[in-house]
Image 1 (cartoon, rainbow, N blue to C red):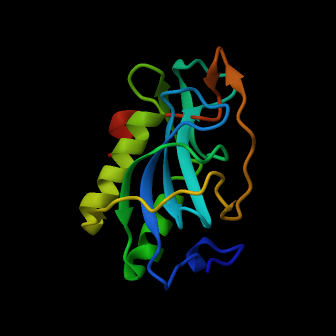
Image 2 (tube, rainbow, N blue to C red):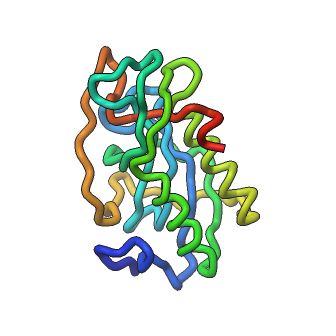
Length: 168
């Protein structure tokens, strides 16, 4: 069971923790993608990268944020052994708030999500498995503050995206 307040204490000794790539949900645009961590149908956290409010989606500044629109299609799912949970969560949460260049066509949420998940898979030798059955509405989000996304020309302004080189 996860506990509130301290991300380092969000571990799952039952071994049900996963890391996944998640597609759009709710009001997000169709090609949106984020990285999820935790128990799919219980407490979890999802991060993405989007253009900051007031910035251009075609060459502005982006930022990693907590994606509150969860429940999208799971594209890939990886088992996270209990001994690696704190390491992976700490590394993933270390991305929160980071800024980078955003470009809708070449450096967006999908680029960031794939770079981050590929890095974690390689570093921790995670094994791809079939995702558990997902309930229609996820049970909850790990406790963190987050703002609702806004749109800029139909693009999520809270869905920042990094410069590819800066995230490797």
